[in-house]
Structure formats: C-alpha cells, structure tokens
Length: 161
Image (cartoon, rainbow, N blue to C red; front, side):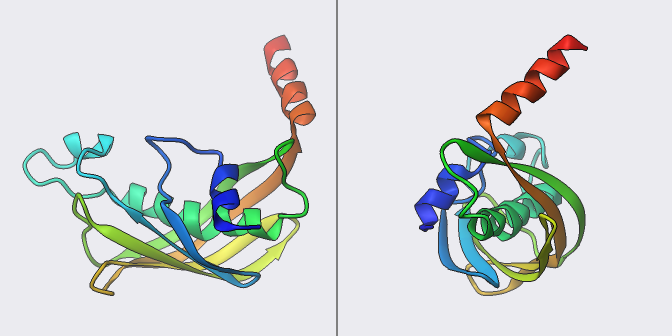
C-alpha cells in the first residue's frame, strides 16, 4: 500500500486531518509529517496574544500518523474502498518538551510495540524542523476494518433506539 492510498483511507478530513505525507513505512514503524498552517481553527483561542499548537492537537497528529496510518498499512489486506477502518484511541501517555508555532513543520516517527487482536501500541515521537524533540510517548488504538454493510447495520441499529 502506497502512502497516498493510506492517507486516502484515513477517516479524517479538513480541518481535522493532520497528515501531509508519509515518508517511510514498514511492518515495524512509520514516519510522516505535517505543517501547521497559520490559519488553523484552534489558533484563534489558544492563546489570544501568543498562538501555540495545543498539546491535544500534537497528540492527535502523533496518533493519526503514528498509529492510524501504521494500522491501515498493517491491515492493508483487509482495507479497501468497500472496507474502511474504524478507529478508537484506547490510551496515550505523552510528555511535551517544546512548543509548536503556526507555520511549523513537524515529523512524527513511530515504532510498533505490538499489534494483536486489532490493538496497535506504538512508541511515538515528534520532532521539529531543527530535529529537536517536541514530544514523545506511547499511544494505543483499536483499528477494525468495517464494510459499508457493517456501518449501515450500525446506523440502522442506532436509529431504532
């Protein structure tokens, strides 16, 4: 599966897609990057006079690249245009060291700890353009391929309640 195909399978869209490109992919890890645009929606209120990227957005960026993109790659034989990945973040522990300002490009490097029973756990770190550590931690998530039929059945069940 090629990087563009993985990104196309992501269950996110603007303004909540934080993956620009994937630069390295293997069974054991993934590397990708994202540039935070000057006009991202969250900068208006974080903070009024000194915009910085919220830690929760940095964590989300690491999760999207480091866990979700890697999970899609690992499930490449099960995911297609008819079978989409359903994602649930199950845990994270992240330490922060540097701020990320509007316009900055970050690189996420993820190393698989384990992938079993559709649960993927990764050691993930984010570096800035100067190759300084921005944040790092462990992020886990469940990645389950669901067909349109499965999704329709879920929607029908919810609507009957």
